[in-house]
Amino acid sequence: MLIADQISIIYRQPITHFRIWLTRLKKRSASRGHRTAPEVHHHWPAPLDPRFLGAGGDLPPSMGAKAARRRGVLDLEAQFAFFRSQHRHPVNAAAHALLTWPILFTNLLILHFLPLPSPVDPALALALVYAAAYLAVDRRAGALAGLLFVAAWAASAALAARLGFAASWRLVLATQLFCWTWQFLGHGLFEKKGPTVSDLPQVFLMEPFLIFLQMLNKLFDYEPYPGFYKNVDKKVEADLRESRELKQRKTT
Image 1 (tube, rainbow, N blue to C red):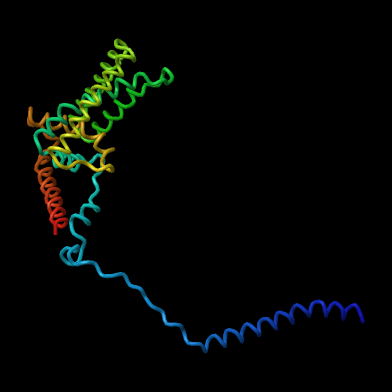
Image 2: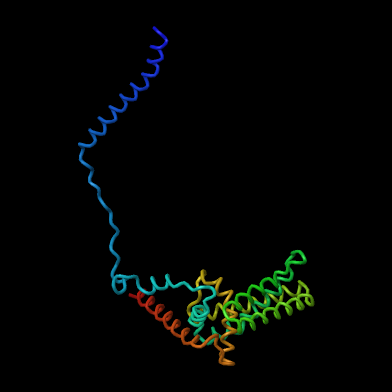
């Protein structure tokens, strides 16, 4: 056999195998095409209970509007409305008005004893974070609150140097236990409601300023801008209406 014939056989064999495989594939596809398609059963979700639907089939305000209307951290109107709706009982309101700032002061006090390098001051960093947040929501009242925080940092540093760690941590522990106990009692025993876990970061950041803003309003009739408290009252009424509707749905 000539070399040219051998080469042609070598190149012809793969082509022949490919044609055979293609013919078999066409036969299989043709035979499948004559089969009847299997019946497909669609499992559609069950319709929603009409009791949980509002007007027009939309979600009720307690589910839809509350989920869609998220409070911004620096949304002063929404934050103040939420604060007022959570502190309507006079005992709970007084407990937070009197005991929130002592909690913050003792937080600053114990931060002076963290074993960090000398240029780093966690108490000053915390005070500046609070001051910057309050200055961002209201320049005038925020500036005053920021000065209070800087003054609290300076006073806590002086007290930490005077008392030392042994006496400071006892003071911090006693103050924190007393203040937090009354705040928990205010929400659980008197108010009968409180913020959720997801609300706590915003509460820890904004509540001292909201208390300070409320005091400025009561003492000096101060408001950040005209119409602020009217807008807050409307949002408080909306929040209370949603909570009442939610309670009614739970009882029915």
